[in-house]
Length: 268
Image 1: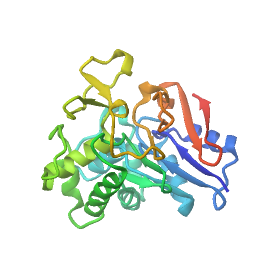
Image 2: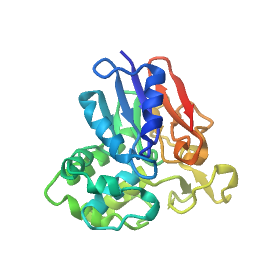
Image 3: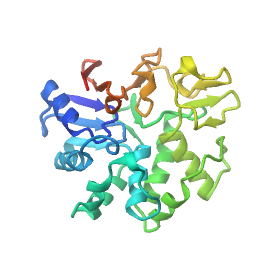
């Protein structure tokens, strides 16, 4: 029995199946976890979703920014961008079932006591327990009767910093931004949601979220995340496992094998 965590699939169905074939993934025996962005810019998001849904309890995911955007597009809240490649999904006869299946997933999930996965990362002023608690807040909202309002209100960069007193829309938006869009954080702990480059090319005023000391993170806890293809899987620390290696951009699709602590990848 093996446990795998895969980076951003982005609708790259052929790559997904090739990587799982490479490791001998067997549903019912093995479990596949995903760090979000299951769909979007790849060649076949519909086949990707159909396959992942077919895995049943052998699959688990967290939501990425592209997954949330698709949910918003499916409800007429936003229009799809030309390069999103979402039309086959939107035209699928099982669209309502796909929407309900996607919105069940949380923003963060503890695979076990020491391995926590989230799409973008752990905000440096949060513990992993806070991350999971705030994820649960959004999960309850997205599976509730007023879930569309969450999607309507998430499109903004503010507030830039976390405050325990944040409420309602601003609280939900910060949690979503920190868990699905974050890359860089200022010394003031304010998010910068516009810069996407590799750390070596970033302004000196910005630091990767994982490079900022987090006194609430335990030494034996590990964060598995995606979202940041420009890192090419490199964080400089084994505590932060970056799994988006930019397959959709012509690089590699990567998964992590929990039992051996090894990464396996295929090139685009």
